[in-house]
Length: 103
Image (cartoon, rainbow, N blue to C red; front, side):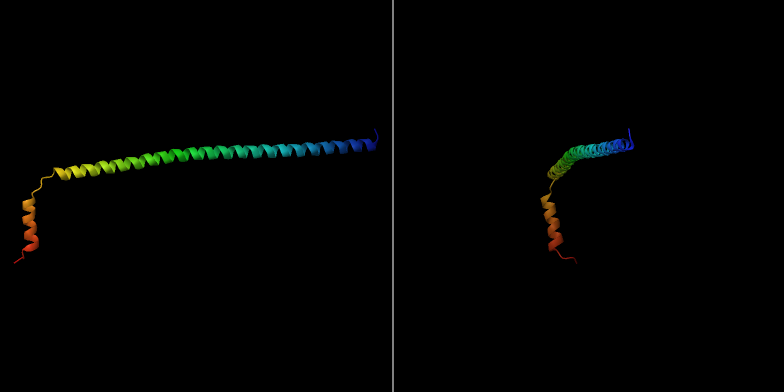
């Protein structure tokens, strides 16, 4: 083999190596891009699931607070109904307070 053939062979090897490097870089970029895409989809799915769980918990908490308020209000109303009413004494006291002057 003469020098020209050796040089041509080295140039061919360099060209093949450059092609291999270029192909490897393209494959690495494709894999990274695909990984980012999959991770993004997984994040969005997980995030949406967490939001649904928190929203459900929030709505259940709101319903529980409303029910507690309703039951306390109903108990208060019942306690008011159960209190004895002395209308005559109340009316006399109101007349005395509002109509009679202090001396």
